[in-house]
Amino acid sequence: MIDLQNTSRRIVMIAVNKKPESKKVIQLYLDNMCDKDHDLVYLCHIYKAPSLSTYPLSSLKSIPWQKWEKKLSQRINEINTFMNEYQCMCDVKRVPSLVYITYGKRKKGLLELSKILKASMIFMGKKRGFFSKFFGGLPVGVAHNCRIPITIVV
Image (cartoon, rainbow, N blue to C red; front, side, top):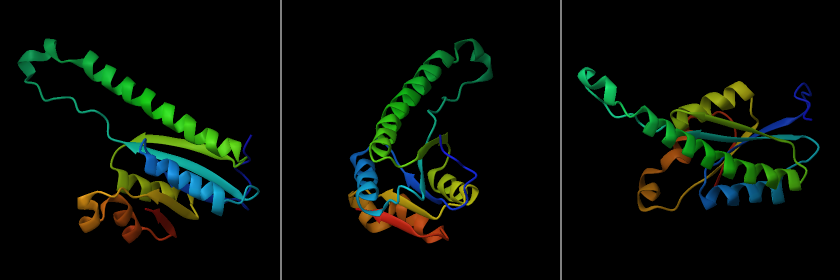
C-alpha cells in the first residue's frame, strides 16, 4: 500500500497513451531516473470521449445511446489494458505507482493535474510526425505553460 501522507515523496507524472512512445518514456524513467524509495509515479491518461452525433428533437426515439455506450466501454477497456501493462512495468521495478484516467482536453488536464498533485516533474513522449516537427504538439504546449520541470522523450 502506498503512503500518500509521506511528504518526502517526489511526485512524478508520466503522461501515457497506447502508442509505443509511452512505453519508451516509462522505460527511460524506470531505467535511468527513478528513485524507488522517494518517488511516487502517477500514470496519467486523458482521453477524448466518443462524440454523440447531433440529432433533432423530433427523433429522440432513434438516438443511438447503445452505440455510444458500446464505443465508450470499448475505449475504457482498451485504456485499462495498456494502463495495467504500464503499471506492471512499475511494479516489476518496485516503484510505487497510481493510475489516473479521465476525459477532456489533454493539455489543460495535464496542467491542472500537475497543480492538484503538486507534481515535481512531468515525463511525456513526442511522436515524430510531420506536423509535430513544425507545430510542436501536446508536449511542447505543456512545456510552454508548465511551471515545473518537464522531460520530453523523442
